[in-house]
Length: 337
Image (cartoon, rainbow, N blue to C red; front, side, top):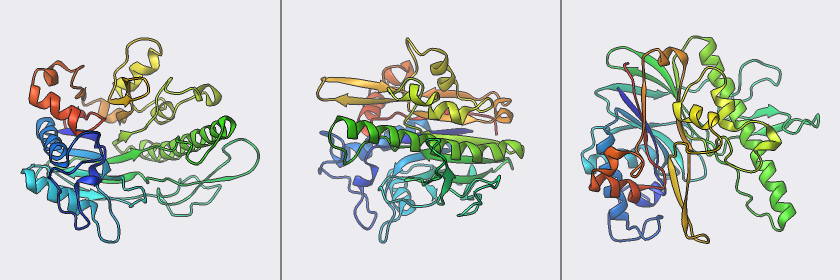
């Protein structure tokens, strides 16, 4: 079985208010890319990776009139994708939802959140991801209330062969100092947002730990917007979100490689244009972490980077599609389930 995670930049811009695909000459959210070019590129990439299930990060919007599931299923139908069923969890207000697009002939998946909305402050069970997490962020004896701007998607998945496992899709993102003016204010906002992101990672790790303690196979997939050495604030907190989530038992080879080699070449999964510097910045932001019982099944990871992966580079249509579709590249996990 092949599982994947893929952050599709500005996917929501490809649909109208009725979730109909806008594959036309209008501009998408990506620079100098039309909606038709981006939509076709996404379809090429999804066809090429041929995954049984794809965790879509920044999926189309869900709201009063729009439906993430309907938009994704319309997209799959338009391009004849075998991954033509979708499921999502708690909607958010950012127009960047988290959803799973999957092949219903290979597996079934349903939203299965754990925990209460308002978990007790001294309880062992972390709250549900649309709830509130109580934690002292800055060790000032004052309790902080943390919420997810993009609640992780908790799924139970059952394959057609009867294997059942948990899968959590996550998009941790809370670093931008919006509204701050002046150097000191920006620094305070950045540190505060970094602290909140680490709190979200602690919350998510607590949920992973419950599955690990219960002996449940679990996979964490998504864009964590973090990693060892990624920003200048890491020294203030000692660990990145990725390190918190990995703990001593979850595994992702790209994350482990980055942790072991803070200076030098590391894998990357995203590529951003820096207009002021007229160059690209590359970073490892996307991960698929698996529990020890799944590691025993000899999984294999692949980052579909158009320049770093020779098989991608050797196919011009795929190479260009990967560059056109998004500023992130998909990661796949092949595993015997």
